[in-house]
Amino acid sequence: MKYISQLSIVLFSAIGFASCSSSSEKKKEAAIEKESYQLISLQPRSIGSEVQLPGVMQSFEFVQMFPKINGFVKDVYVDRGSVVRKGQVLMKLEAPEIEEHVSAAKLKYTEAHANYVTSKDRYKRLLETSKTPGTVSAYDLEAAEAKMQGDSATAQGEYANYKAQEALYGYLTVTAPFDGVITERNVHPGALVGPGSEGNKPMLVLQQQSKLRLVVNIPEQYSAQIKDGDNVKFRVNALPGQDFSGKVSRSSGSLSNNYRAETIEVDVVNPKNIFKPGMYAEVVLPVTGNSNAFVVPRSAVVTTTERKYVVQTNDAGQAQWVDVTEGNQSNDSTEIFGDLKAGSNIVANASYQIKNGEKIK
Image (cartoon, rainbow, N blue to C red):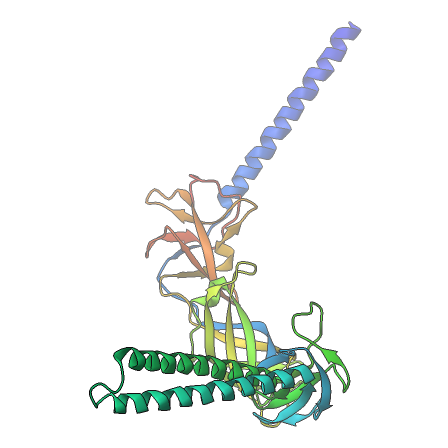
């Protein structure tokens, strides 16, 4: 009897639990049925807005000056902060062996040129004399012409060597390739410098600061919406409260593999030197949107760990999941792209609880 009593208790408990569970499911279904979904009709439209991105100021022209040949620093005429002009002498090196090579090359050229002048004069005389029959043999005339041509080639070779040595000697004088400011100096008179030494610092660093480049990396989703000539606004962190403007001057035309972004540049004229290379800026760029997009409330897009979709209703009023990608966003609206058509109805307040094929009321 005790066993029958315990079994009865278990059966009554199971029946009670099943009854409660069934009641809970019915309440849940009733709640879903009572929930109303707002439907909106899709129409092609785009979102034109602005996007804010970080940027950095860079010198319009920048050069690190390394020695072309081995030598000792003789004189340095500039220092950090010096404003220089194109062609201005910045420093001089000395290398006695280079000077000797120039002198030797000049002497060889002078000798070769003198030999050429002599052989040329001799050939002309023989040529003039040969006009009288029997005075000069054909062999002697040909030999004189060959000697003249050989001396001419030798003289040209020595002249090229002389100019090459002169060019090397010219590397001992370092001049500014453009107008700018010396921002780094790492050598002093008496220092031994030379090319190609790994880890060597540049002798001087020259930057053009009267004109700068504002460099901005544009994410892939916006790269097709920004073109050369577009107006941009920017603020510099070091100059709070001041607004500046410019235009997109150039773009790379490709996306970097590391960041999936396109680099653009804005030329910034800096006559008063209020901007400095390395300053960070917040840049506001206009984005035009895509004419093939549909604009929907953000609540219409359901995002899960596996996909991003909207809930579309068919002619029978059943839910259909349609995968989408998002474009520009503004306030509570977003652009979507997918297998959608104008005039289709989608749920504006969608959620993951709406099952594919479920009846939408």
